[in-house]
Image (cartoon, rainbow, N blue to C red; front, side, top):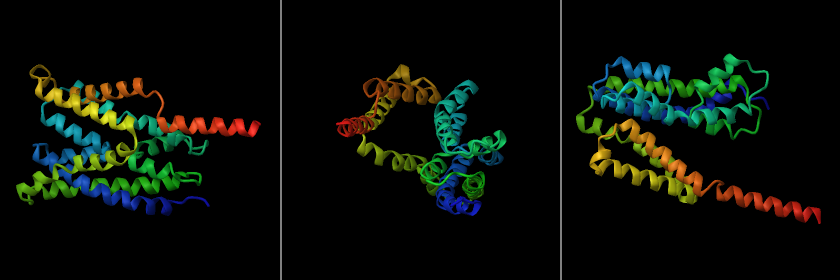
Length: 248
């Protein structure tokens, strides 16, 4: 079965609906932090990275330097390189570079999660379908958030600020409950973040550098302690045993 545009559009509807709620929170957050109303719209149109946009608004509103903002967003979004490399394995070899660039632009966490599970060969039309509806959902939610920022009462606008944290918790908790290495990464990140908050000298470091340092330290410690994920190691050991049994 060849995947078509309408298949991707259909698969992207749940992603778009989820994006609308988070993008509304982003639009409200940007407006409440004093950014010009056109700026969150331009960010969603040109960048299309939820985590990076939330972090960008926070850094800009805290008067972070340009280098700090750029490097922090690079670290936050560097996972996109790995996702694009992985997704490229499932793309047709004859797909042109401009088309690959378009797919890379729309390769968000959720789009990647849906596409990577497809058993059928991915087509450009399918990818454009799922990316387009997701992109429209994110931009529509941003516009809705910006327009409603002045109409909503302050308590509701303030409550919308926890949307990103709620999204992170929803993403993190399921794998953390099943993986000890991931739980250690989260614990180390939390501990280092607390130290940055309570230690007077460390508290003076910019928010962007704090995010970067926390991420690098947590990932580095886990890479040393767990160079190979336990579940992958167990799977490899089972395969070795099966190969030995077949050989005998």
